[in-house]
Image (cartoon, rainbow, N blue to C red; front, side):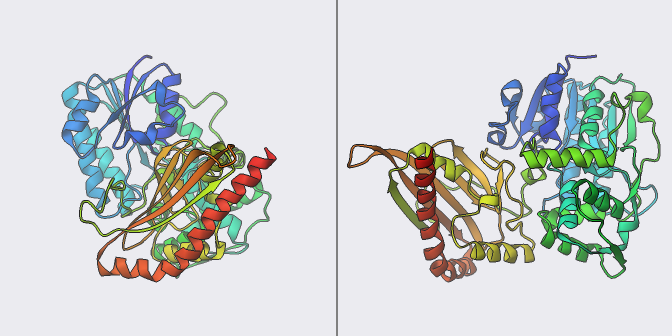
Length: 496
């Protein structure tokens, strides 16, 4: 059965961002639901799908999104959200279930996680189970796929394994490193998800999916080490490392922030392996068989080294991070506003300056006092923030919704303006904005005008004290940043 009308929720996420284009390739008509459609504007497949704005917590939005749809993929998880994320996930699932039933949807597909039966689950896994049950109770034929840890370029599980192994020559680890897991390559997850759209309508239930290898979690780290050309890491299980302490450790030595590390670790507290293979009778394995763990790691490393990463866990918003855009005129609305503005006129072309601006952050850094940036990033990690380790999805190009270390791209007008919104822990809201405009120099030659503006809207007295305490550092950091960005553009432009 092909040519189905499909709705994908969570298309800005890791799995959803890869699933949407593959459904198009399979001949389906795809609609993607997003709270902020601008985050999908620059996706390579955006022109091939219908993008609609909507919030799963608003029943009216969900009803409009499912209208005329045959299959609904529910791929929204609040793994990095703060507050009572389990209650929010359940409400969203109930809205999807009710709207799908009323609209005559023929199939719901949900991606959950492997878990043992009859044991007390982490809050994260328990929420996945509750969401699956709500969708199964909808009255619409539903397939819930319960997957092991997903291995692929940009997946949070892979990033955690990778950085723990890269950084630590000796691994003091919690006892759960001896638990068994059954990893699955992201390509195999997508195989099952795409095929689920064409499964006969009488199929209804929960199905385990996992790769061919059952490993102790510690073995996944040493399997990665072999593929990365690193020595095997001695691992010493320590009973004193509780899940909470382990999440702090992961937060410090990997790019995965504490808000994501906690649910990931919570899903490793038990053996999580495939207990039944009923899926084989419904959806046969991919041609050539399921991908082994070592090969999945090899493929992920190849993608990461080439910079060819389709989607990433970094697309998930940081817990508690502000999501409101920069007001067009915050002073007019009565807000207290602190600004640091710098500008330069340069002989470098607008194209040369923009190239430097769009590639800022990540491995290239921030063009000013790396030690101060590193210390500020470490301080943010210590209080549970995202720090500098998130880096970038692509070293050269940005799109709205991308992360750049502790910033997120709020708006980009390519070639002219880039605005980043801070997701670090600060007593207020912060942005940094870069603009580039062409100018005619006194000599008559073509050059450009570069503007850089940091904006901070403080929250209470603590916010004001925070800004004032950093004014001396800002004088150095922002002045050097403006000067060096222009200097690099002039140098690279002269070379070109």
